Image (cartoon, rainbow, N blue to C red; front, side, top):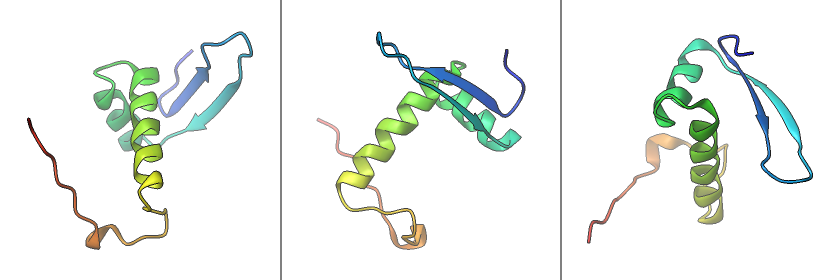
Amino acid sequence: MHDIGEIKFMAETDDKKGIVIKFDPIEYEAIRAIGEGNLSEGFRVCLRWAVHFHSIGLRSDDNLDYVGLCTVAD
């Protein structure tokens, strides 16, 4: 069912919702790498990152050349 650049995602609830997203080959490989070979997991991780960055004020029209990222290790 997977054609390069296409992900079919089903929510894991009783109220399943489907979504079809078309990615170019570079985006497809990035999502796959982020999910360690699992496209659904890669998409979920990216979605969690997007929710986090949106909640702290980053918007899609912001210039990423002026956005920094700092990681903190315990």
